[in-house]
Length: 201
Image 1 (cartoon, one colour):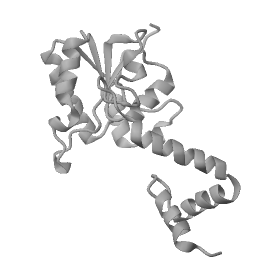
Image 2 (cartoon, helix red, strand yellow; image 1 turned 90 degrees about the horizontal axis):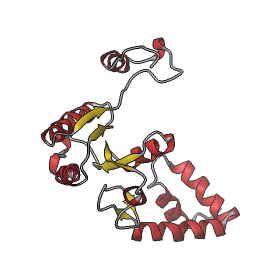
Image 3 (tube, one colour; image 1 turned 180 degrees about the vertical axis):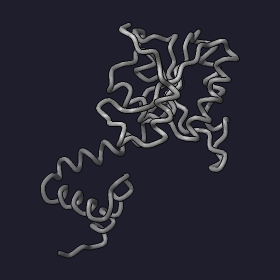
Image 4 (spheres, helix red, strand yellow; image 1 turned 90 degrees about the vertical axis):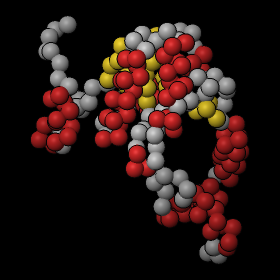
């Protein structure tokens, strides 16, 4: 097979995607070229449109092609409950679970002094303004259970308490269906520190 510069460039371009190595990129490129050129054209058009038109919601900083995203503009959602997450993928995960009907604020990262990420990089001024203007009653902290995520959670708690907003933190621990013998020490420690009363309520 004659690779050609264009084919090699096409395969290399696909490797920009996370988890796509050389062989996967080759498989994708050949599939589109040999079996689904129409699908490839549609993908290319949508990618270009998305990259040109998708930005950040002015209210929650989530990804959207509107000034205010559909979650923030939905009047049926509870504006008094605000869930703070690290990334748009966290919003997708929570929405997929279908367990939260409030609104979101996306930090687009977490505090990490070693990486040069401080409070100014996380839009915390915008968050403080949301807490004031939206009359938020409860702020749910849903940062990841990492060292940086926990440090961010404590910082967020201080901001919310200054605004007299109730602060809660999502629980972390043993996953449903998991077995203790296969659970790592950090997860077990979190499970014990966040234990709650066992009752029928």
